[in-house]
Image (cartoon, rainbow, N blue to C red):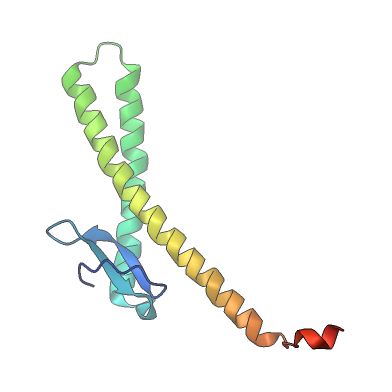
Amino acid sequence: MTGQTNTSNSMRLLPWTTPDGKPCFLSSGASGGVISRLADSVEASQTSTGVEVVGGAKAVLADPKVGTRELRFALARVTEVLGDVLRVAESRGARLAAQDRDEDEADEGDTPCLPAEAFG
């Protein structure tokens, strides 16, 4: 769970970074472990916060009397949560792709393989 940049099939992108902003990864072999459950909880919190922030930003945009300061604050918050949600989407997408590859490999093991000559 260090600031590695390896995104191999066995690594899960975590929803936080190192103090210097590098991505953190967790070996997917640790699925269901304490860190994995913590990451799931953080991801759920980030997406929930995203929904709330977008709702607040919509309210700010709907107010014709809102000032520049409020608009900048709303945009800053939306940018933050968008980054978080994109990271969650990237992490979940990578895990779905890995799961699909694992299933394909399992299916290949169940199917007999015949040489081309067997088909004439």
